[in-house]
Length: 304
Image (cartoon, rainbow, N blue to C red; front, side):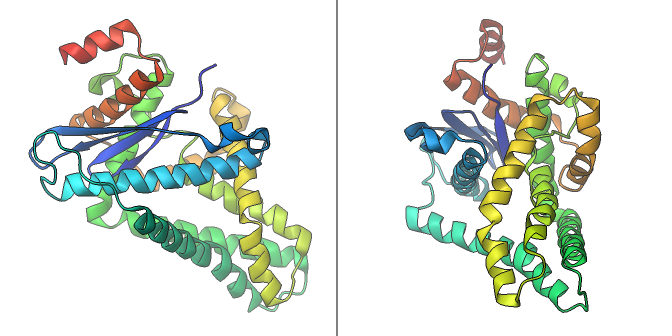
């Protein structure tokens, strides 16, 4: 069975990725669609240990974040202005700038969603270690939902959320074996079980069970455990989302994962046909590179 296609919304566009290639398509200010493709050298292919369950999730998450930042840098250059004249591609963000951006983003997320809830819960007069972890988890999820709600109210992010939905709709249509056209993709759901929003929610839920093993340690160990165990929790959440993606027809499983699916309503908005066109262009580019496009797909692309 072919590995799944994933993606993310970027500025005025969508990035799609397969096992060995990724592509970003962006609607430029002049209305044309710009495309950039890159190959992937999977780290997990270098050693069998990196393909073990849970470990592979940590590796995949790191690769996805790195590719996501690269795609954002490309889209930012295209969306800001006619940065590329003719067929010239815009420059990607430099290696050290990428590392710095990566570190700042991860640091912000860890402090806001991991360390802060633990320290807030530590201020409460809770003696039971089990209740402490539950209350901490509720604080963490509340902060996360409030954060997403706040983002959903920012008008300038609406188009990003539309492209997020366009990414989901295109992948849903592809996985259903449908013809990849904007009109066809528009009929599909803007929700997808492998969405990163659902992944983040399950990182928080799984964290409750993992942190329960440590009870209520001193505040400094509280910070250490919340940061040090994040890769393990992320790896477990990755396996759950991966399993859900392969069994999306299981109604019992989908019921259990429903909260993560509902949460996507905050980060998606119905896309336009123009936005779906961009998403499908990125998807077709990846499928072409991965050797998965059928002859009819190629004919449609030529005729478009």
